[in-house]
Image 1 (cartoon, rainbow, N blue to C red):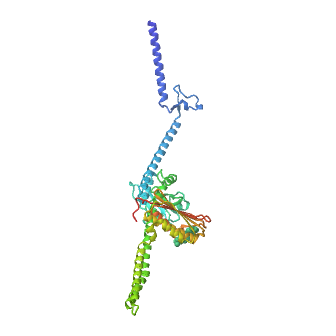
Image 2: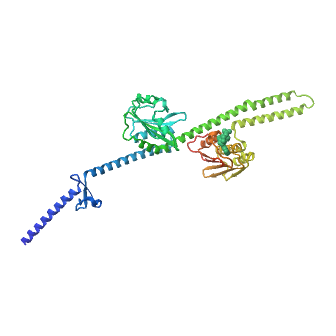
Image 3: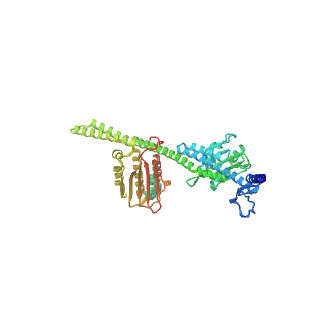
Length: 463
Ligand SMILES: Nc1ncnc2c1ncn2[C@@H]1O[C@H](COP(=O)(O)OP(=O)(O)OP(=O)(O)O)[C@@H](O)[C@H]1O
Ligand SMILES: [Mg+2]
């Protein structure tokens, strides 16, 4: 019994020692110590030489562990930057969606770009046609001294500057030495103690629209400012810039439409007032004087005739005044689009096939007027330029928009840049938040496609 108890005690002690040794060994294997790091046995590579442990883990050398840590840190860094860029894009996109002004969007782009790229001074430039660039926004790190853009925001694109290189190559560019730079920007950079400038093209609809420029007071920009990262950010933000630009173009085009319409109305009123109206008034006065001096046996008859003529003249004068106030064809106002378009079609020198779908009664006046003038200009263009034998005019209404298509089978080659008629239509249609497209390949006829919403956009001012 004593023997068996002693035997059991020895066995338990041995078992305990084994368990403790096993636990120590396992703990060593699990907790990385002595420059080795455990990985699951499943990941063991064949050339390991059997360094695996009985727990199914193996250890890896320090340098591999360091590489894993560095790679994890790099991924984390990439993730953080990715999240930063996404946040910046979301904020700018929200501004665009809220319909804020283009200048606010550009300012947000400059600020977000600065923050995302760890830059201290950013500028967003728009290239103008006359060899200059306009500063549309700039941003300064609030913790650093301000760097104001030079020359009241009008930047000459001189050779030897980052801006010129970006514009001509359509690629990012960098300049680290302004010591002997004689350009206006070079002199300004020296004054501001700027030692490095990095620029990147901003493309809108495939064309170089402008540039994002980063100014640095150090010889090298911060780690985040690499051409690749700038390019990536600018490409992502390009849509917001395009949207802001088209919105500002739209507003400008609306302003042009209103100004042009006012101007032409004033001119017609002036012409009518100084010309036809004055002559009619003079004629009426002459008739009155003849009426009062008429003599002889037919005096009564003559006087009545002259009185009638004077009244007719007054009516014509009234009509003229009405016309000069509106300059919209009376048939359109009185009877709506279908009869007005039929009258245009009848007058056209090229045969017109007119197909008017169910447009659901009268449309808002501004839409009717825009459609009428579009058809009128398109038909005039066909007669003037197309050498066509037929034009097809189709008008339909779908949901909240009217759709107009004017197709001719003529020579094609219509070009907005060569006249004022098509540009005027674009202004008129876009002023109503509509869209116009001119398809006109040489030899393949011309098609004008127009879509105009029948409900006004909320942010359009009433005309
Ligand atoms: N249907 C068409 N077929 C062929 N060419 C066309 C057609 N419409 C326009 N074009 C071409 O496009 C150019 C621009 O047209 P647009 O209506 O803007 O100007 P325009 O008719 O020349 O002058 P206006 O300013 O008096 O309208 C025209 O000069 C013409 O060359
Ligand atoms: Mg024309």
